[in-house]
Structures are given as C-alpha cells and as structure tokens.
Length: 455
Image (cartoon, rainbow, N blue to C red; front, top):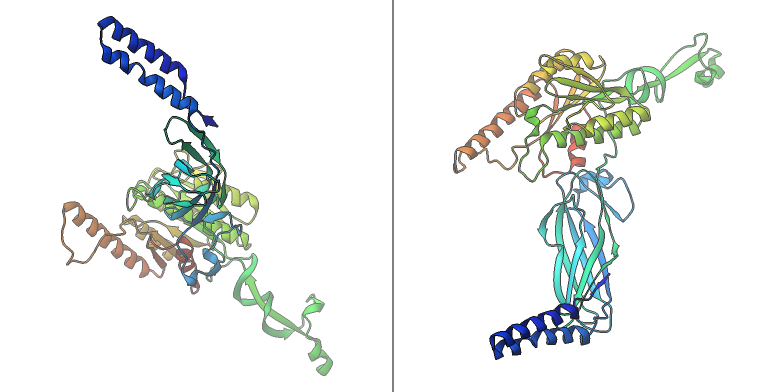
C-alpha cells in the first residue's frame, strides 16, 4: 500500500491564510512566508517516487542443546520452518534486508512482523537505513518463548525520497523461518519397576509374553504349540515349554502442585513454577502415551483435586492435555474429574492414586507440604520421582556472599530452606531432580525419568 504525503490542498489553504493575515496586518514577512507551503507542495508534486525493491530473509534459532541430549532436544517437527523450545527460552532472530533494485534507497524503514504474544528481550525488530544497490542490513533481536505456536508476520517496509515529501508503505513477505513452537518433546521415557498387568516394555521377574528367555518348565495342557521346546522333544521325546520374561506397562500419574505458593517465579520475566511444572508434566504424559504406557494426571489446588485416570487412548491424552494446560486458570477442572477438598488436598491425594502406580511430582518445594506428601506416598509403597523447578535460581547461598539488603538475605534463606527440603525428600528413597531453569526441559526430564530401581 503506497502513501503519497505530497497533498496540495493543505498547502493552498496555508498559503491563502498566511497571505490574508499578512495583508491585513501589513506584514511583508507574513506575505513572503505564505510562499513556503507552495514550495513544499511543489516538492511533493515533482518529487521523485522511490522505485524500491527489497528482499527479506529471516532466520530463527535457539541455543544449542547439549550433546548428551541427543534427538530428545530437537523439535518434534522436523520441518526447517519450525523452531521449538521451552517456556522462557530466547529465540534469536536475524532478518536480512537487501536492496535488489538498481537505485539507492535514501530512507528505508523496516519493522519485522514479531508475534504480539512474544516479548522482545534484546535488540530491536526495527531499522532505518540508507542502502545502495546490492547492499544489505540485518536486524538482530531476541524474543522470549511463551507456550503455544506463533507465526511471524510479513515485514512492514516504508521508503521516503530525498526531500522526505514522498513516502510509500507496504508489507513484504519474508523468506526463511516463520514459526516458533513452545512444546518441547521428550524422545523416550526409561521407566522404573512399578508395573501393572498391561503388556508393555518393562521387564519383570515372571514368565510370560516377551522376547527375553526366562525359563524352561514341564509342558502343561493348554500351553501354546509355539512355546514348546521342539529341540528337546526331538532328542528326548519329552515335552517342555519355553517361557520368556514377561514385560509389563508402567502406570504413571503426573501430579502437579498448583497451590498458591506455586505461582511464584524466579524473576518477573520468567514463567511461574506452576506453569513450568504443568509444561513438564504435559510433555511426560504425551511421551508415555505415545509409547503405550498408561498415564494420567492430577492437579492439586488449594481446595480441589482435579484428575484424569491413567489410560492409553486418545481420550485420555486430550483430557490430560486440557487439564494441564488449564492449571492456572480459574476453572481448573475442565474435562477432568474434580473433587472439592475441605481440608488439606495433599492429605486426600493418595485416595485418587491407583495402588500400583508410579508418581511423578512436579513442585517447587518452597514450603514443607510436598515433603510431607512424598513421605506419605513412600509409606504407602509408591515409587516417587520429583521434578522441582528452582524459582530461587540466581540466589547465592554462600554464607560469605555480601549482604545487599534484607530482601536478598530473605531470598537466600528461602533457597537454603528449599535445598534442605529436597535433601529430606531424597532420604525417603524418592528420586529428586533439582531443575535449574537454565537447563533445557528435555535434559531435565531425561534426568527425572531415567533408570531407577524397583520401589
């Protein structure tokens, strides 16, 4: 869309007004000044239109994942147009603007099409330059990821001529990357020993269907023909049955602490602990379900427990996703089974958990209640793993650190108390991952759900 600023109507009106005032008061200066708007109008009429042609290309990137993360750190979408990351990650944007025309552009202004929901945390998506034919300039800036998928818009381009009286404004498509997605994937979930009667991938200490040899026993009526040891029969004429190590699926419930204490964030720019916990739980549930393991979710609010029972189908996936994504909304239950709690919801939690399940607890541990919950769960025989986002990150807990004020001291004490709670939790036999927010979520979850002994 072109916008020509040279418009003669206002100039004629201004000229007549100044000339009339000058004649009325007898001022030669005002009469002479009345000619200035006419010169401006003439410049707009006879000014040269910029025949500008630009080409834009955008490149998006996040910080390189550690080599130990492997494919788990990559985006679930292999398309080169999609860049994925975790909440709070910074996406670096480099947009190159090249003058591909035959004439210089004396006044070129470009605004990149940043999605409104993504804050710019460094650099600027705007520029104002002069470009000779074939020359280029680069906009470099960073945006902070928020949960969801976002598409960059076309860039807005404006040019002005040498006099500044003729301007053209239009939108120009940008080649290269245009999509960022805040939904990191976890490639695989190695599981511990808490299993159930579903067929799955976790070896057990019993014979049954599987691929690993377990034992040979005497043939019993009804044993499948395919399990008979025909080699032994050929040599001894005695029937025997070969058993393989049975494999069972692990039923897992992801528990997210969404009490009011979890709405604290490490800084005003970072997501609160409840959002970090819900994101990690959502990725875990999705991965478990994609590999066939029964999984469910429970969200613990101040006076309510909202749960989705473990399952394996698409309905379970959708209900768990809806529940976890609505964790910090006013109506947290959604499609989940919700129950109002008149006392401590953590006291009621064991009643909604299947007896043979493993529990993944996501909480920042900024108070004592999660520690008490882990103790109760371990006393009931549950295998428990904890993922705890550190919302006291950046606080120096060294006693020798300089005291810069009462607030800093209080925050350091909170960090020490949180470390003590995590240490107490480890003594119960639970696996604990202290989530440094500088680490990618994929690495954190690989640590959290790695190989663990039987409960």
